Length: 469
Image (cartoon, rainbow, N blue to C red; front, side, top):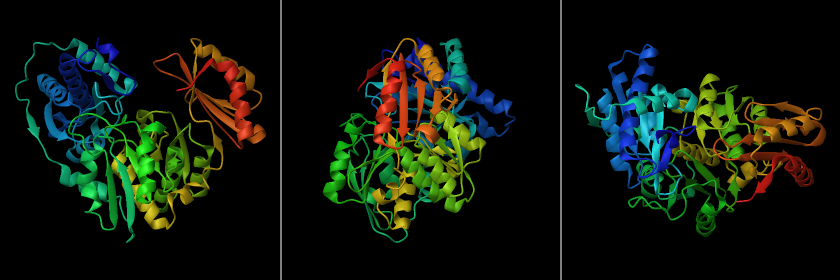
């Protein structure tokens, strides 16, 4: 049963049928064992390296799962620091602020309310995915003796770290004396807690900031719309409010507030890759010549803009586990992903929705331009968006694409396959396999619409049945 809730980057399932209270205890035990062993193997001797930070989101099942998780951590011998109801990036901050062995956030992010799960990080808030620890945690959880009570000497304490966290996030905002109006859609998630605490109710704690609040009530664990800002229909309320309020921009957060999507002053949705390019230039002004990490599905304009600003573009695999690692390995100053995760060197190389918000507001204030004016010159190519194709023969389909285009352009396999025919034919694409479904995911980009339509049709012949959601 445990294997059904362990995913590539986290642990997730419907509660209480797939993800049970007993599993919560086992996962706590397994996570504690893994995190403390990892700290010991790295030679960490600080007494705080027996501590595991635990936080939870607003779902109705989160208090119960959190209790079981913490009991499991104590049963193994780990000490729990319970930070309560927080956004996921709060955990990354707390692990570093307190110098702990790691942290666990009880959340199912953007999934519907009947889901819950766990996001785990180790010391320094380094990500824990399938290949970097989740497989070991699953093994340890399965081996846990269900009759074990709290180990002798283990403890649990509650800590309020909001003042320190607020000070940390506010380092990233500077409105430069400007007045700014922003509509925030908290998606009835943890941004409804974090944004008022950090920026003040309706932005009153930041001079010049006026926040129009949408869906900030997270007391019921229910959602007015799915808390996934990548789905355009979930942004409709925000887009309309930006126009009605004549706001400078809108920002929509996901359920645990580690991701966000921006809407410009005209109600247009800003691609997260284009926003990465905008923010990259902002951070390169402060750290000239630094590396910038970006998701390999991003527009080629992203790398072009980074280079033009004097930075070093670092193309990375899809997924926050890989992006965080790439940014840390290259000592990059900033990174962005098409999914709405944005990563910051000054945030322990971790992602944060509220820091992304603070950074976007600062860029707009200092530029003297609107969001659409900042983005327009970067949106110079035509993108397909992600298109799914259903096929049971994923490997065979990829081999057919490689065979077809091997002599027409450059091909690499950093993540799926990327075919680059831009110099000669004016297009490139990336095709990745789904981890869990019989699907291939195509992202293509071209110099113009006609070229894009032609190549998508050409590639479709190799990839299976197109699935339009």
